[in-house]
Image 1 (tube, helix red, strand yellow):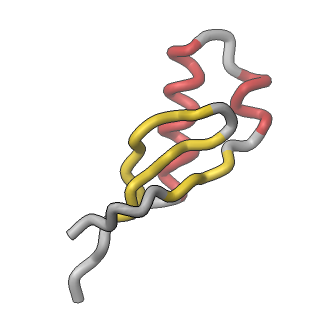
Image 2: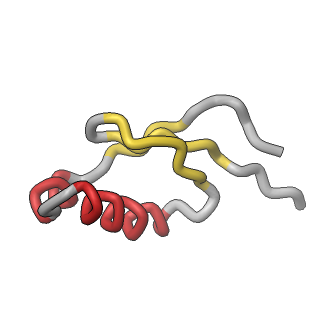
Length: 58
């Protein structure tokens, strides 16, 4: 069951400073978001990643 409320995760500035192109931004964002295992990326909007949070069933 997914919640319909979007969650925003602020991306650290080093991602944009380190990346040379959009492909590298994508790779770094995916790598960073492994810290949020229950979040599914919807889109990158500015300095934020808009995500849906997956609900775990107990």
